[in-house]
Image (cartoon, rainbow, N blue to C red):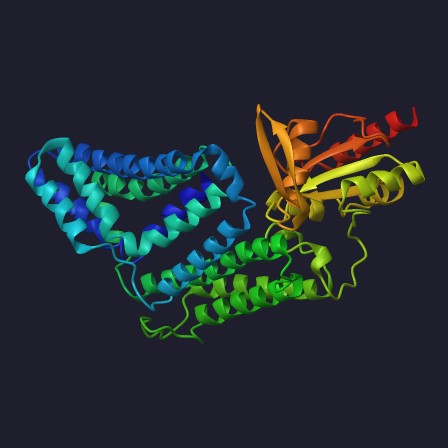
Length: 449
């Protein structure tokens, strides 16, 4: 909801939407000069129509893909490659290489419908015209939002995200209709609108690397380890900082005679963020971006000793080792594309108490449910009355989690004895360190008994 609302607010500041606010509000006020109350109600209805249109789009995404498909997107390497390419495409568009424009016939047809109809229907078609006309700017933002919400695996996430987006887009049209005098205080259109697009282009480019990283890890290509990822992010955000200072200029940018205070502060934030990431090249945890960066174990040169490493990435091998050393097992069902898994590893596992317990008292087995490495031979299992074929290592661990623990979400932690029997209730995503320590100690206590 919050991500959608922020996306809608950013969309307002683009060249395709901002100039339409005073034009549209003035239209409603002029159309109902004699009845200001009617003008305000029409503008509010216009805002509601915008919300309905984008909410239907969010529901359509869920309807087309379905609940299970949305859940699979989070860890599906092929889709992550597609998302990477899509976001790079959007970034290039925002940089000014081309505009994403829907066919003019669509806009003309909807526009004519708005003219030929009356009442509520005409206002709805006017809102639909806004959605089509502003697509060159809102399309990439909507696309990014839908990609992010779809990969959460939640059924209603796309609809909620679109509702937040549309709400932010609709509020100013209704607000300025109720208080038209505020229209005069709105900043005038100008080069600053294009600057918003370029800044979004840099952010799209940075976000795209996250999806490429997921695919790279799942298939084991090794082209985007943690250092490479951080170097690219450092360069992207440093260039963004220099752009905001006016040191870089894109094709459609206006001349910047001086740096405004907002641009100065934004450049400070961007350059500071770039510098913040530099220690990560030598292994610093960088907790602020742990959800986006590749895992610590992909780091080639690492001076940091606070990371927790699994004893085994294979269930059978790990269990055999646990029996040999007579220690309880901590199963970590994880995934290369699991954002919350990275958060737990960076914010919880790095705590000295947690690290000490896991390293000294447990055999940690990490099972990646999106590992695309092929199994030596396909395994056929019966699941829910039908035969399921397990083709990859990830399929095998995902089935193990579903079949043995009746769960299909990550991260998922459970403590087992050396015979594979649970010693405590499971533990899901919760960054409270005290709760995690209690979970581990409870499992240890039961093992000793």
